[in-house]
Every structure is written in C-alpha cells, then in structure tokens.
Length: 214
Image (cartoon, rainbow, N blue to C red; front, side, top):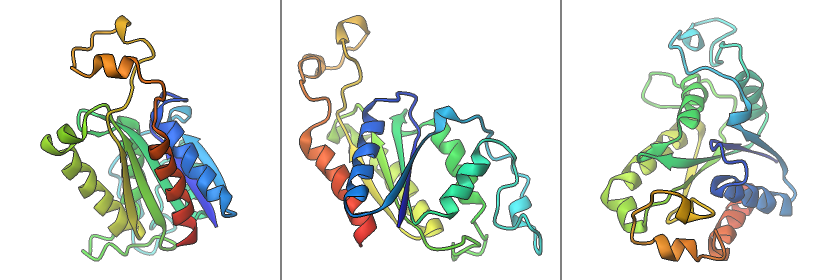
C-alpha cells in the first residue's frame, strides 16, 4: 500500500505539515510506503477548462494535459492507494494552492453523468486535514464545517471515499506581541507550550493507520 500526502501550506514546519507527517508515521507503522509533497515547491497553473480530459476515444481522456509540475504528481497519485490532503483554512476555505490542485486532480475524473464513477484508475481511500485558527464554535457558526464537509463529500464521490479531520484553535505565531491580533484567546495561545496537543497528533497518527489497514 502506498500513501501520498499533499500539503497546501507555505509554512514548511507549520500545523498542517506536522499533522500530515503524523499521518505518514501512522501509515509507516503498519508497513505502508509513503510520499510527502508540498505544493509550494511546485510551479503549476489552475485548471484552464480545456476539457481535453473529457474527449472521447483520446489518450487524454481521464488525464489532465496541462504540462507543468503537477503532471508527475498526478501520475504518482495514480500509482498510490491512499491520498491525504492537508490545507490551512483561509477565509473559510482551503488555500488557493490546494484549490488549484484539487481542481486539476478531481476534474479529470468527473464524468458529467451524475454517478461520479468517472475514468479514475481505481477507487482511492482519501482524507482531508484542515487546520485553522478559529474555535470549534466559530467553525460551525460561520459555515466552515458545511464548506469542508461538502468538499470532503465531493472528494469521496469522485475518488472513492474521504474522511475529514479538522484541527481548530491553532497557534499561528511564535510571538503574538509582534502582530496585530485582537482575539480574546491571545494570552492563552501565547503561553501554550505545545503548539498541537498530543491528542490531536494522535488523531492524525491513527488516521494514517486506519487508512492503510481498513
């Protein structure tokens, strides 16, 4: 079994990356081959709507034809069994880099037929990890939960299955005194010793195990 983890955060050692690496450690613990990719290391375009991946009886059917740094990644994904995406949440949604990537990944397999079975090479097991500064209450009240649950549903219907794991109330800054931050949790976050709780790291580890063993 091979698991590929794709990070949509520019912070190479930030919350999203740490959660994804815990998933990787969990997968490795049960014998999986793993690969980690940060989208910020790649140079690529958005989906350009050429619809070459929809052409009947063509070599491009079911494959994105845009020739940039995503092309080898999309090839590696087809050789994997498990896909785990990780993204910080900006203004209630995934990062722009992650959205551009998922447009390219998912659209090539869409069949416009309503069944979402499409031309993918296999059913993948997938997961989406979303990290964000907001509290659990704001996550629900402002519609973040609805947005992410909906997107996880799209991933599941298109690729085979999808599990959503969220990390709320994250620590953003090493030194909050240097930044304009007026939220009431400033002092608590400033004094937090562990940036991510052991419980949340364990959830990510367990996710990696589960995706490989289930």
